[in-house]
Length: 129
Image (cartoon, rainbow, N blue to C red; front, side):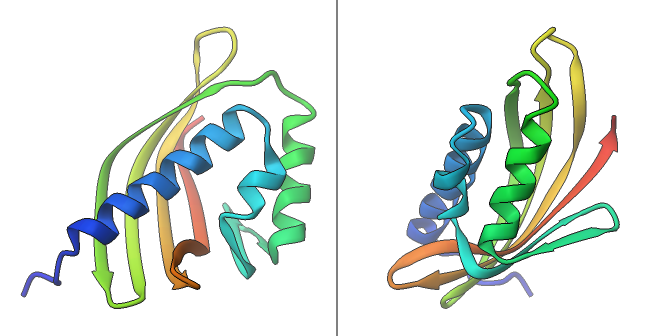
């Protein structure tokens, strides 16, 4: 059975995903941090970063060793269940030299807190590096 679709919630969730990509690309990591729940987790490969502060510190440190790039996200699949949602989306990260730096899939668990969607878990699985 197909889960219920919430077009208004889905549009707001797509905006959350876009704000993450724009924030990372523009290196506004404090803004990106506010897209995560305070106790959120970011899972990258075998590494898990727990809590908003650790997530922001990790993103900031990773950016220090590279030039800014550009996210391209597609194939967004959103399932909303009340104040919870799961999302799978594909990404391509284009490096400053216009090569593909990586590509893969984001798998997200979201919660609506105080009327806004936020990441509770974001898993990044790169399939091309």
